[in-house]
Length: 307
Ligand SMILES: [Zn+2]
Image 1 (cartoon, helix red, strand yellow):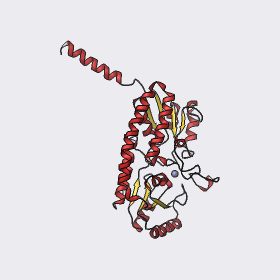
Image 2: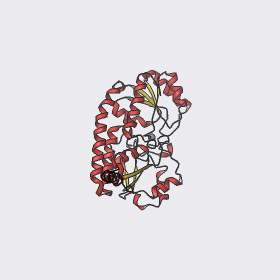
Image 3: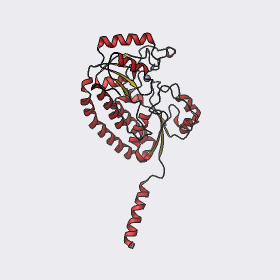
Image 4: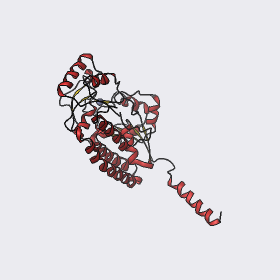
């Protein structure tokens, strides 16, 4: 190799080395994988992101394992959904983490429900003793990509104030995500136009923001109350109503047992669509890819194919 080529290639290697961050500037921990995926999209190379819950886990009930508290111990920023979604497990972990940076009211703690318009907000006091896991309003807003965008904006603002030197990068990444989602949303709506007004049976109230976005009508749920498993008497009632309303689909999240949903879908009969519990963040999926997957499953359901 000529001395010139050697120097050029050394220069190129150094550039590559210098382009890689020595370490992430912000360590971000998200309660659920959709939030982790949004945080990674906004933070890019400047952040290290972990998700406490997996997409295959029920986000209302996550095991507060010690290694999760250890993740929180090192966090600069904790992202939570709020609306009491994580009330059964996150406070325990946060207390065990001994990290003052992520306590309520600290800049290192961000509940993203403040960035979206909450559906099913209670107008009177709700007693959680009756099993309602949605006593603060419906927390499943990240199934609506428009809410995803609003949340990403909120995350970008907080990352910029915690790590001002990278604020331009966070803004640029947010602009890229915004362009990507704004380009995809009309196509998704077009593919699911047939869902407008369609009567749908769902397992859990995960569908509130989805039906607000796509215009379908979830007229009944297999759970008698959010968080309470189906009972035979309730299922019989749902089945009667589903036949009367001419239901088009049965929807349920991946993390719930599917026996009852299969039974009900088979008896109506309509396709059962299993929707993802969230972004497969550990598998490298992005939030946009997750919504694409969700739309594809719903589209297949409309064509008569279950998941
Ligand atoms: Zn729920």
